[in-house]
Length: 573
Ligand code: ATP
Ligand code: MG
Image (cartoon, rainbow, N blue to C red; front, side, top):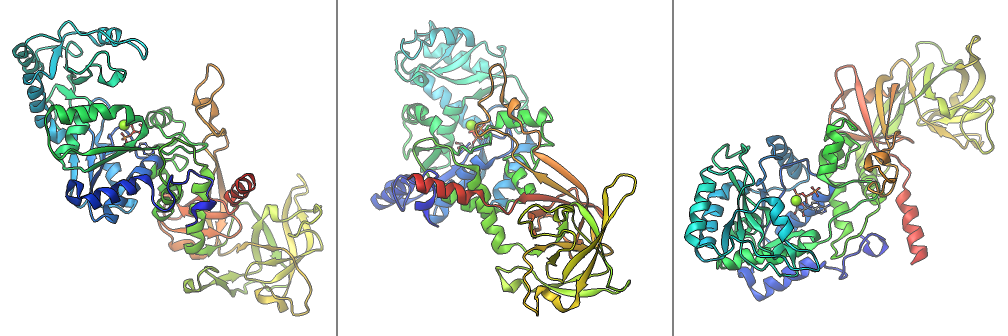
C-alpha cells in the first residue's frame, strides 16, 4: 500500500492513525488493564452501507490487531423504525465482510431493565427528574446557541414524586409524549446536549424483541454510554457528529459513579462522491421505487455492492487506504472502483461474451467443423490454467467492432481489412450482407487465414486489432446489466432550488442488454462467481439467474479513471 500516492484523506500521522496511537498508548500505560474491547453499534433501521464498512473494519480490525474483542450490538432503542429484516441483513453483511463477533452479539434492548434501574438511581441521587413539559414546550425553553435555556418548572420537584411518576410512566399510565425523564445538568451550558436532555420517553409501541414489555424507551446517548459500560467496552469509536455528545456520554457514566469507564473517540465519517450515505435517504430510494431494493447493484449498501460484484477483499482494501482522520472530507468514488479492479485483475478468470452480436460467416471453414482453441484463463496468474474455446463457421462479434466506413485509426474490422480473433485466427472481411428492406447490416462474410492459429502471423504482417467473439452454435444466451452511477452529480445533496436529491438521479444508471451471447464455459457459473469479459469489464452472476437464463451484472468497467485522478492530484501537489 502506498499512502503517499492517495489524494484521499491520509492518516494524520504517517504510519499509524490517531486511534491506533491512542490504543498503543493505553496498552503501554496499562489503562483498562491493557485490554482493547470495541463494539460496532448499528441501529437496525436500514441496511449497512459502505460508510458502515469503514466503522466495521476499524472496530473489528483493531480488536484483531490488539488481541482484543469486538461486539456486535444492535442499538434498538427506537421501536418505530426498527425491524428484524435489518437485524438479519446486518449480521449477514458483517460476516460477509470477513468479521466475526465470536458469539458476542448483543442488543441495547437486553439492557432495558438495567437502564430503567439506573434511571431510578439518578432520580434518587437528585440527578434526574420527571418533566411534564411537552416536546414543544421543551423545545421552547431549551434556548439557542447564543442564549441559555430556562429551567423546567418540574426540575425541583421532590425525588419521591419523580420516582412515583417514573414508575407510573413505566406502567403505562400516561400517554405518549406527555412526560419524560430528564437529566438534571445545566440549562445554561454552551453545549445544548447538556441542557437537561431527555433520558427516557414514553412510546407505546411494540418492540421487535421486547414486544409490549416496555412503553418507555431510553434515549440514544444514555443507552449508548450505559450499554458500552455494561459490555466492558474500553474504546467507543464513533463518528464526528457525536463529538458534541461526548460530555453527555461521560456525564451518564460519572453521574452513576461507574468505574472502568469506556472512552469515546470520534473519527471522520466516510463521504463518497456521487454517493449518498444516509440510511434515511437510502430508505427513501427503496420505498419510492427509485431502485429495485436495498440490494440493487447501484446502491452503496453492502448488499448492493455484493450483488454488483464487489468482493470483501476490495472493500477492506478500500477502508485501509482511506485511513482515519479527525476532519470530514470526501473520498472519490473512483478509489473504490480502483480497489475492486485491482482485486479482480489478480483473481478473476477471463472469458469472452458479446453484448450486441453481429453474425460473421467464415466462408472458407467447412460447415460442421469445430476447432477447440486454447485460451489463457488469467494472464496475471498462470495457476488459473487454460481452457478450450470452440471455433466454428458461424461466430458472433460485437456490432461495434465493425464499421463499414472506418474512422481514422480504427483497428477493428472493416470491409477488406483484417482483424485478430482473440485466441483464434486472423480474419478478413470480404462481404457485408444487408437487409434489403432496411439497409441494416445482418451479417459479414469473412475468410480466415489457417496459418494464424493463436493469433501469430508467420509472414510477419502487422494486424493491430484484436476483438472478442463467441461461436454462434455454442454461445449461451444471456442478459447483461450495465450500471452507471446512481447520481449524476458529485454531491447528490446539492439540488436545484425547491428540489431534493432525487432531482440528481442519473436516468442512465441501468442499461439492460438482452440477446447477449457468452462462451459455453460459463454454463456452470453460479452466484458469487466473478470474472472478466475481455475488453468489457468485470462481471458477476446476478441472483436473477435461472436455469437457461443467465443474468450478469457488470461490476466495474476496465478503464481505470482513478489513475487519472491520482496523476492530476500529484501534478497539483
Ligand atoms: P446514517 O447516517 O446512514 O443513518 P447512522 O450513523 O445513523 O447512519 P448507525 O446504525 O447508527 O447509522 O451506525 C452504526 C455505526 O456506524 C456508528 O458507530 C456510526 O458512527 C458508523 N457510521 C455510520 N455512517 C458512517 C460513515 N459514513 N462512515 C463511517 N462510519 C459510519
Ligand atoms: Mg446513528
